[in-house]
Image (cartoon, rainbow, N blue to C red):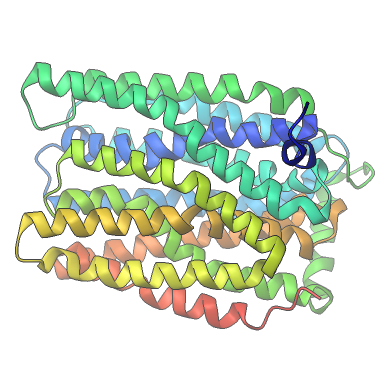
Length: 427
């Protein structure tokens, strides 16, 4: 006899396949962007370069990757709304991300510029595929289930992404114990790049087979010209979509802070003297704790509505930013470690929830047949956010010589985001 709760929450094949893609791509963001790649870049590719300089270079590379896609997003999103085009764009960027992730295995010690160049292409592939993945949300589920399905995507992405992460941890720990060095083993890091590419490609197959473009605009004789005209019309009629664009402005500010913390956290941890093993275990804890908390956000959004839960997430991140600033000034290494664990726990409670509910909240504000166009704007605001945050942190870190002042600079982004979000009305 089936559990009535399970029956009530049963997923369609399209919903399951869509959620599974979050499990697929989470390996890239967790292992490449957040954990192994920043450590590999600082310890191997940037060998001999000062910590503050390598941290700043990492921030600049992430900013540049975001800038490239942000420039393209509105136009390619608008073109993708034509019948049959959304999945073609998705496949193109998926292949780009997987292939350039494999190319990271060619990086050698000291070749920091080559490392960043390959990483930029891999990140563009990841982010481009995500643009169209997000846009498929309106095609796979109905509006009243968007908060829950979006939250499930992030939640299962966290717990599912922990599987390849644990394998990678084993390789890194084994390599460090065998080599007797505090630096990340080159072989272990490159094996991690291969694992990510294979995991990402394999678990993307159900998405490719079972998710289809339900809402679309009929094909036009000249798709490029028609798309430019549609973009022009959208800007002319911006008042018609006032709440969608107000939300995008709020999203730009607060997700800027969230993305900066995700992108720069590992490098920041290295700067305050935390070991590689400690950082890896902390990130694994975040993956596990984030799973139930992201689902809780999805459930609470159904009871209290989405926007109040977004305010909760922003408030948590304000707290995280303030404590991060004072962290390097703690009198002992033990206190720093304890505080870093506390901060990591709070990140785990809200990271998935604020991202999942932002996606579903925006999905409710837009016309479904133009989802790729509007998620193109969602992407451009999100990508410019990932440019300004790491870039701001990179500049302040370079000028001050200490990354704690770069962290403090993103506090204003959460405050501005919350203020603009108050003006958005879903009704």
